[in-house]
Image (cartoon, rainbow, N blue to C red):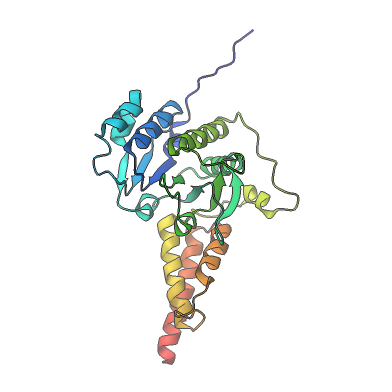
Amino acid sequence: MAQPQLHQALNRSLAERSVFVLNQTSHPGNIGASARSLAVLDFPTLRCADPRDPNWRQHPDAQARASGALALLDLSTEFQSLEAAISDCHWVIAVSADVRDFGPDLVDITSACAWASERLKREPEAKVAFVFGCERHGLSRDEAARGHLLASIPGQPAYHSLNLSQAVMIAAWELRKQLLGSAQQPTDFPAGDHRSMRFAAPPYGEPATAQAFEGLIEHLEVAAKSVGFLDPQHPKMLMPRLRRLLMRSELRAEEVDLLRGLCSAMINHRRRAS
């Protein structure tokens, strides 16, 4: 009887387009340990956004905990901000133990990885980013709001906070299973929950990048102010609600252009009227 193949290599394109982003990491050792986990699980793309230690690659703890993954640690990319680190990514999954008001839809990490895997396989050029917050505070509400989904690693309610590198390892392991096709699609969405429809999203045009989406949000805010729909003195939760609505829509690049054209028309009409 043939023995099962336990060790398999990921498709290079799928692996390279799976982006793991550590935001404002304070302990270089966690970066090194994350690099080791990603190297073992065959993911070569690690990005560090605004790390607290400027010499994190050479830090003894990072070097020690990376162990045999020093090459991946050396090739990891540093960015000045989270916005810059995910700017070229088309889908973003924020990984957090805490629910955020007016944030992305909350799913477990297995469901999030199935969602990511389906998009990576469907869109041959698209990138999916998994974003992890700093050790002390995790992701802020505004940082988590940049995700299309908010993914949580289920644990006991009284204590469900994992070490950063452990969370990276679990997310990478779940994504690897999905990309290799060794895991079934999740079936734990409640009956009638429209999130299950996300797997059937039609692939019309190129997906919008995070950078393009943020440009739309900024343009939409200016337009809403120009027509008096948004009161700068009392903004309430208008923009977070609109962000969440548009995130669920999974906008394509041409749809972002369309909405930005509408914003320009609103602004220009207001100026002519004035």
